[in-house]
Image (cartoon, rainbow, N blue to C red; front, side, top):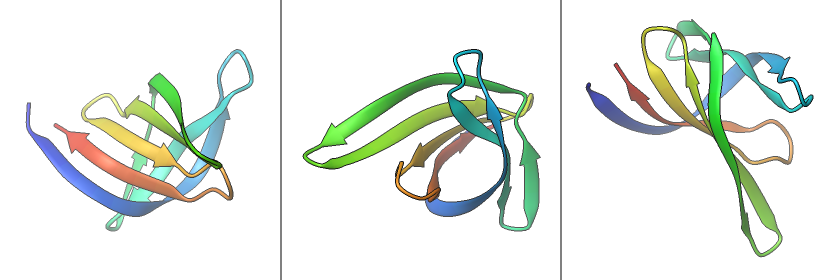
Length: 83
């Protein structure tokens, strides 16, 4: 498995909801390619003082993605991608 560290801001174009009504990305655009996620995996919330971020693992059926949300306004960062 090839793991690429990216750490770049991406555009999330569609959101979905888990059974407990927690929102997660369903689609994102990165460098001109649109990725449709079929499953949201693990997630955790990280707090540092007053700041809070959410880390998610997602898959499109081919690659695995790690993303971070700032939980303040929809800014998403693609941390890594494994193919």
